[in-house]
Image (tube, rainbow, N blue to C red; front, side, top):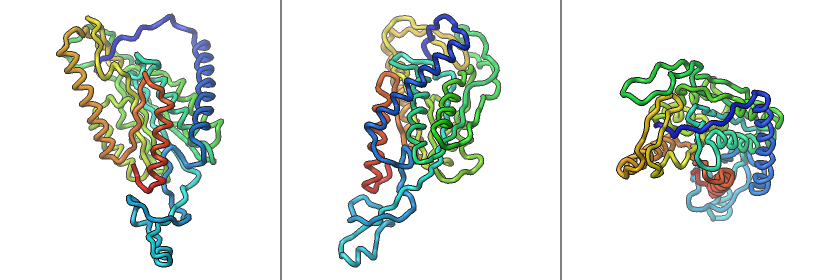
Length: 335
C-alpha cells in the first residue's frame, strides 16, 4: 500500500543524530518508568502473566475456571468446588521480534510509527527485566541494496530487492542489558526494500528455547499468509503477543485533492485524487479488510493482539491491555 510522501528536513550529522536519540531514549525511559510503576503495581513474570506450574493456594470455583485445576481433596472436605491456584514461573525469558521495515518511517499523528515501535520496546523491557527476567530480540529491516529511484507508477514489477537485514540481540537479564537492547532497536537504520516478517518471526523458533513470552512488533502490512504459519508455530511453545502499530491515514484518506504517495519499500510514486469519494470509500474498505484479516490470523494463532495508534496515547493503551490480561488470568480465563 502506498504511503504519503514524507517531508524531510535538513540532514543532521551522525553524531548530532546520535545525541538526539540518546536524549529521546532517556526521556522515554523516565516516562515509561513513572507511568507503569504508578499504574501497574505488583510483581509478575511479564506482560502476559501466565498461570504457571507451581502449586499455590485453593479458592472456590467460579464459572469459567479451568476444570483441570480442580482441587478435589479440598472439594471433598468442604463439599464446595475449589480450584488450585498456581504461582507464575519466575525468570521468564522474553523474546521480541521487532520489525523495522521502511513502512514504519511514516506518521501523521503525534508520533511516527517507528517512534511507537521503540516506545513499545521500552515498555516491554521495563516490564520484563524485573525479577531477574531475561529479554532478547531479533530485529529485521529492509534489504541492504537501495531500491530504484522514485518514479511515476506503471504496471510493472518492482526491481528485485536484496535479502532483508536481520540482527539478533542475545537474551540477558538486568536493566543495563535491557537498555543496550533498546539502543540497538533505536539505532537500527530503516533500510529501503521489502522486509520478510515471516522470516523474522521464524527466527524466534530457531533454536528451540524454553517456554516464555514472544512478542512481535510490526505494522503487519505484509499479507497474513507470510507470517501466519510462523506465528502459529511460535504459539505452540510460547505465550505470544502481537503488537500492531497503525497510523490513521492507513485506515482512511483525507479529502485534500491530488496527493502524491510513495511506497517507501519499493520507491514507486503515484498521484492519488483524494477528492473522489468512491476512491476514499474503496480505500477505507480495503484497509478495514486488511486489519480484519490480521486480527483473524492472530486469533487463529492464539496470540494476544494489542493495537497501538500514532494518534493516541500508546502508553495508556498498553496499561489498559496489561490490566485486562491480568484481570482475565486472575478469573481463570485465558484471553
